[in-house]
Image (cartoon, rainbow, N blue to C red; front, side, top):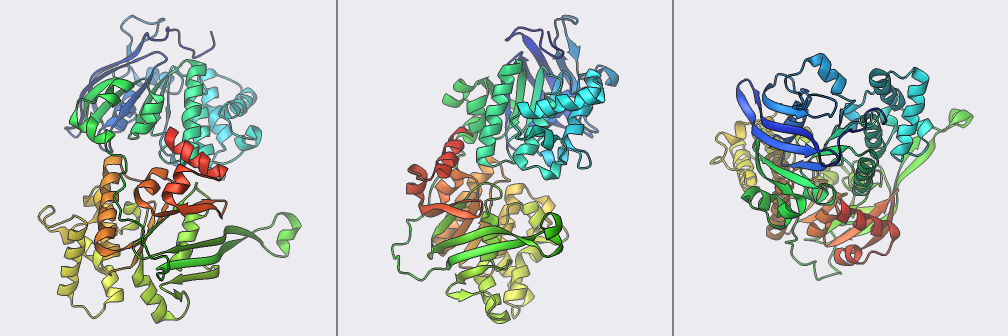
Length: 548
């Protein structure tokens, strides 16, 4: 038997959690949850942000600072006492021997979980030296093999790379390699695919399933993505506000959910509720582009770099038009050029070719550009980082009026801010002293509503939506998409929707363009492109969306 391989037969108990309670300063956040994981089983813990699922997983290894833990979490091993080792009460020194060796963890964001100052090979080798006692050379060779097992191309070269030199999918594969270094019996996977593109997400999901079968380990999957659970897990437990409200085999829970919260999660996939596409193809477009090209100077390798810089083309030859009241979806993986296209459309990047907003181009003069900026507003991906933590809601939402309507009195700006907030579903009845609050006092979905109100207050004709729901839970995502659909119907807004989520495109867009490596590979009405894709890359995106 190899080191770290499970000595328990598949189906035998591996982890038994009873009455687990987690509190901070006396306030409970996990309320006596119970669950069991068998050897070789894929078990999913699903729920929205704040439900307690990640705290539950981290508490099993006592990785939550200042947490007050009670209950038991017994890890069984045929070579130990029959009642197993209680992870919540064994000495810290003994627990350090379990972390990484018998129970390993994949964190949600590999860029922050990996040490930016060390190569990924060194970080994997460190685990092998610490837990397996391998000499440095052997550990480095094993690290390269582990990277190869996860499908990273050129593993020897990638092992010498720092984390920032790898793509998001490669960093996640490196994290998986590190977690599997000692062949753990239980793998805790905390949202392992949330930050990844849809095609990479499908690849990581298939990789985890393959490695789970190969090593016979159990997996505790922490996620809010029910579609991922449906394709990966054997059993599932649903958490709400620190309680497990439903559990059972995946097929049973999904086909006949018993708890209202489970039914709410299952029903929270994006739904299409948009007006038909504008009927007049000859109508003047809100935004149009012809031969749009965006490039950046880059250093040349070797001696050539002494005599000038090279060129990286981020967007090449893009052409599109957005009619009044229409949504154009732009879909593609990270690095495809879709966000660069959006920044160029906003006049924030230099470009070549023709790009016009309501018939006018950027750079025609300060007054002209200011009018275009009023007609065209943007909502960013992460509302927490796009809203200043030092400004009140009144200052954030009303800021645009100071620029575009400086003649308004303070009382008028305040009234307009309240109206914009009411339009997105935020009122003083719900939030007393609403205008005097700060962004940190709101949830993620409420902060995104603040960002939308900030954009709407100047009465724009078009909104650029840059991944507006990717940072949100599924139920909040559905609410925000419903809000955007309602605003489009009521105001006749046009949207330029940037996303990697095919289902969001299907729910929101009239037209869609598919981008890869800066080029538009396919475009047309959303039903034709997504239901009958012609380009192999589009077919790959649609297939990956169904799997992940």
